[in-house]
Amino acid sequence: MPLRLSHLFLRTLRDNPADAEVASHQLLVRAGYIRRAAPGVYTWLPLGLTVLRKIEEIVREEMHRIGAQEVHFPALLPKEPYEATGRWDDYGDGIFRLKDRKEADYLLAPTHEEVFTLLVKDLYSSYKDLPLSIYQIQTKYRDEARPRAGLLRGREFIMKDSYSFALTEEDQRAAYDAHREAYLRIFDRLGLPVVPVNAVSGAMGGSASEEFLFPCDIGEDTFVESDGGFRANVEAVTTPTPEPIDHTNLPAAQVHHTPGTNTIATLVDAANTDQPRDDRAWTAADTLKNVVVAAVLPDGSRRIVVLGVPGDREVDLKRAEATIGGLIGVGGEVALEAANEADLKKNPGLVRGYIGPGLALDAPVLGNEGSTGITYLVDPRVVAGSSWITGANEADQHVFGLVAGRDFGWDGIIEAVVVQEGDPAPDGSGPLRTRRGIEMGHIFHLGTRYAEALGLQVLDVNGKLATVTMGSYGFGVTRALAAIAEATHDEKGLIWPAAIAPADVHLVATGKGDEVYAAAESLITQLEEAGLSVIYDDRPKVSPGVKFGDAELLGVPMLVTVGRGLKNGTIELKDRRSGESHEVPVEEAAAAVLDHVQGLHDVQGAR
Image (cartoon, rainbow, N blue to C red):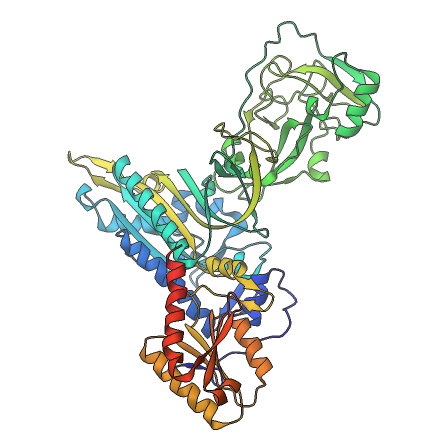
């Protein structure tokens, strides 16, 4: 039976909703696919569910193709498994927590690593049971502080998450490679161009990490690529580290009075005026900027960290967040933000605008363990023997010729600056270009972190207990739907790829005569007998302009109009993607529509 718009639970909107900033959010609401229930939470309407289920089915087919088996966990889970792995605390405010009537703690699961691990532990005990890959398509919950962009960053969303379990590195690598190929096939079938990039695993741990990013200007992720084929999320870009410099003959550092130079620009101007060098002018790259940040730990407490970076570089807090936890000895997600006035008042040795890693002054020395209690981390370019102009920890005072490794040390090295256009690729494949993207999927080796925490062991071939190694593979189902809407639309509305459109054909009947609706019904019968699905705009008192506007807004790629041409014995066919239309005789319409729809599927399948 066709979906008749006269009865379909649907109301389209002419104007964009006030809270929608991006095209996918605007169009999905206007076209009646979703409705806002709360910030970051959406109700799915019939057409939206149809598209969503088609995406899910493609994902299922590709998971089954690699031998993965489907399970389904509850979204409401007890505290204990997450407490055993440390993630109950690590997630901080990022998850929804609740208590039952007996005061037992629960959470709405943001991910399901723990219960996947425990399920395998419960059922399997021998190496003969492995390798194994299992998956689910399940709703996840995260308490986003600022949900935005509709389905692209919400508090409730649907993911496919799968996990592989193996005893050998060879089996784990095979599972990883199989998932990678499955993801590329999924994106190809969805008609969504993605770029696999090197990545970091974040709070979930692991290694050999890749993200699948959809290049898009509204994307929250930044990635880089080179002509030589290097691609990585900026968090995973490593800086080619310069060789140490022989500082044997470098003169001792000197403190100079530099009034009113609390910015890099004013410092460089003062240096060139009062302390000019013979060979060239001083530049911002000669200065060492020390940026005070607060690491917000999972329990909400704050730890002050100072980042030492070349003065010609800006700090990228998101990039620093990727590794800061390990460098300061904290598990879980650590957020970084600029230090506030309260933070600075608690640390009076940090003189705003004149902070330095120390000298033979009475001021505390950053980077010397135990001297300040403040962790000092430096950019990889701050190598032993490099000489810098930097703050002297006193107002209106700077140090010239402060040598790394001779005059100051550090507690660790961190990638914390903005990756710039033209920076060298870590693999030597050329200069980097930066792009924006939306994360669609993430695959990585988990190793044994969860197996060790939860006791997942099996008997190996020698009858000895061995810890199982795991891989994790996430795919954002609702996010994919939004990204496709973002990628395939025009000023009139959505344009779905044929594989996931809510119907194969959108048929519009226009006119007042009974013969128009009789011809439309006859054509629908032929199309459905041929296996096509149809949305039928049979609304009798709606103007042609409104019907055509709704047809273009809803985004079915094949539009058919039964109307004025009927008196000449023709029906109009229109390709929503190209806008091209042509008339066909009534008696040939069904075959022509079937041929065109098949062509749409063939084009997408050949990508």
